[in-house]
Amino acid sequence: DQQVKQNSPSLSVQEGRISILNCDYTNSMFDYFLWYKKYPAEGPTFLISISSIKDKNEDGRFTVFLNKSAKHLSLHIVPSQPGDSAVYFCAAEFYNTDKLIFGTGTRLQVFP
Amino acid sequence: DVKVTQSSRYLVKRTGEKVFLECVQDMDHENMFWYRQDPGLGLRLIYFSYDVKMKEKGDIPEGYSVSREKKERFSLILESASTNQTSMYLCASSTRQGPEKLFFGSGTQLSVL
Image (cartoon, rainbow over the protein chains, first blue to last red):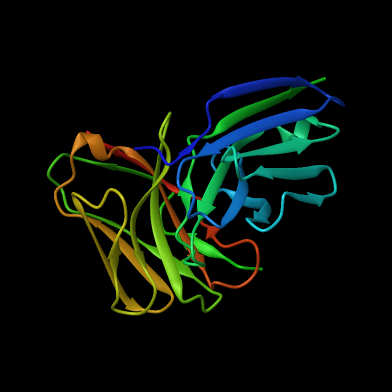
């Protein structure tokens, strides 16, 4: 049973526009959520996170929104740049265990 | 900078072989993890360890075992490799502090023929 879902396997966005990546989860006990970015032949790297007590966290061009009632989070990238082209994984954690449950990933392509 | 090093980038093994995947981290992190990444399935947790000589099963431990004799080293063992274990294997470490949680190695692409 997939507890963390990313229903869009891929997304294509023009440079300068907004990219919106979505993630849904089923376990209401998750209390911390993260986004990781992965380039080919590299390990995932941390991008941004949000605690369940917040509904928004912003870091430069990246903003994560959390809607607990809908069990939904989204990552907004504005403006999108070609270097943002990568696979993005959302992940969820409970009780500060560092044991993360990952989604299936969304491949973002930003074209000129 | 945290560094998590996986000993091999690419590995090709035969069915039935015993396979060792090694991972070393240099930041004195207590926790270490092994994930595998497969297309359409994301990252799935195989085993993890919160301390030396300690191990816990993740979501897909069947066919795998682990060893953690030293704090900095966490080995994943495929006792008898099978073709369905062909995958990208990712090691990670963490310290339960800071927002980043996991620091990953570059991965080992294992092909079992």
